[in-house]
Length: 287
Image (cartoon, rainbow, N blue to C red; front, side, top):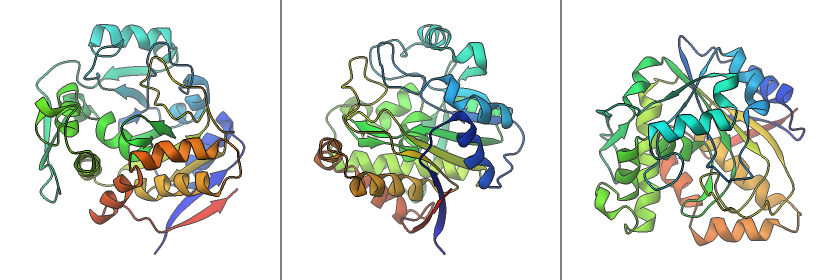
């Protein structure tokens, strides 16, 4: 049976909420809302205004983890200050999941490249997760979407190094690239399993640069906004976003596609689909 992916072209806070409600998913208990806080200096990240109605709907807490590289998000103190500067803590409850060690270690018995994942132990405070992703390019992964949010996004600072290094944190920047993409897919599976299906995903195709929101210096968006997607399947929603980029006649699409293909970005989706927590087969339902 194909996964359902809901889609609308009109990017508004009200439509983000509308698409979430179409999922008919009651996220139980304490809800973690995983999104990207945006690196200081980045002009493309999606701020609180677009997400506010859906975060309020689920009574969620915005969560993040610290980075593994220099910047304004690599320590809890700096990250919390950035939360203030970007308006997150003004609008929502916030938590840095790996603010205090030790990390929570999740097993990945079926992992192709890594057999464990290290996430911020604060994840234990939550019963379900709403994953809000800004779909765009990425300097290493080719693209960033739901799978990256589940993997690198939920991983602790150490866990990010572990995934990038494919189990060898010291190889953070030097691991085999396709193995890194497969390790991301492995790590994402452990978060899906941890929440036992109590997850929902929204991807927004807006401000689509070839660079990630983690870049302090990022290229401006290279193509026009496409829309909002929502699904209960992280693999299907990322595949649908890729397909929408390829189907676009926007003159900037080729620049984004070059970034995705040069990093073999679709391989992450392929690897994730083999692990069984999502499917590349989907039905796009336009509202």
